[in-house]
Image (cartoon, rainbow, N blue to C red):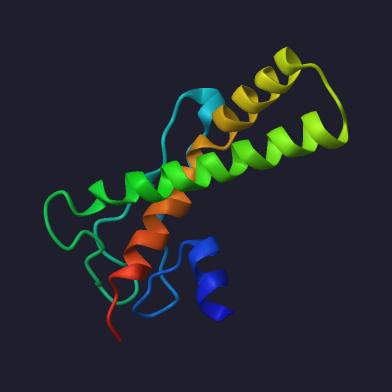
Length: 116
């Protein structure tokens, strides 16, 4: 359970103290999160090789699809909104959670390939 919390908080997989990201970004201000190259506490290098985070795009895609499915089921099946309104809600939620997905997918990717 502690690994899940560390991933959500975007902590360094090596020392569990340093932060992976310098800032959280803000989709409303059109700013994506900025990553640290190395951990500020233990100097662990986050990007193991050039293109390392290419695979994180697939994790981000999976997170976005899961969020879309939850919105679809919740607003169409349980609340019974029209398809057009459900589509608008799904598009809005996906846009608002894009920076969260970016951060979370990279943190998950780092933890997948971290060896103790």
